[in-house]
Amino acid sequence: MARLGIFIGSVYGGAEDLAEALAESATSIDTQVYFDPTLDDFLNYKDDNVLIISSTTGQGEIPENLLPLYVALQDQFPLLPQQQFGVIALGDSSYGEDRFCGAGRQFDALLVELGAKPVQDRLDIDAGVHFEPLDVAQGWFNTFIAQI
Image 1 (cartoon, one colour):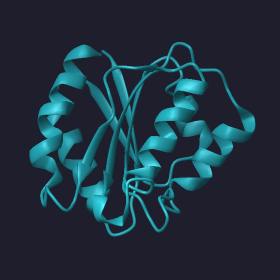
Image 2 (tube, one colour):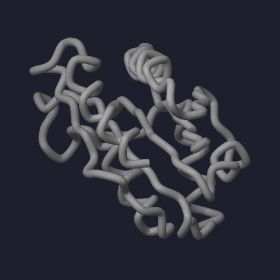
Image 3 (cartoon, helix red, strand yellow):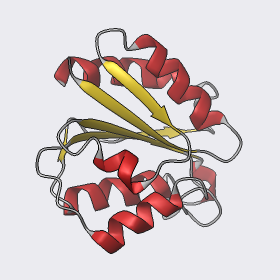
Image 4 (cartoon, one colour):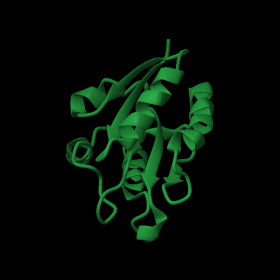
């Protein structure tokens, strides 16, 4: 059975709620959700599938609970040619295009640099347009699961 690690960056719980709902809907795959992930947690999926679900803070930054993983991946730069990934980025476009979904954009770019393979394009969800991110994310996630 395929495995999926879902790694969450959340400040107020929206990304965490979305991750839990999506994980519950993934009945055909072994899914584990990580709120305070370590590099070891992430590297346990180097030959499997990962999904980053992150809100964006401040000036387009990665939330504090996910930032240590991002920094560790940057610093240690483990090559991940067997890993497949997806990114769901939560943001608010009213803060400006350069900040919108910044955390997700940063993770997306880093994983590509590490050699991981995107399963499909990143999903950016604008809180100013979509008040319930699950309504937008569920269809994207269903396609993601079908492709892995």
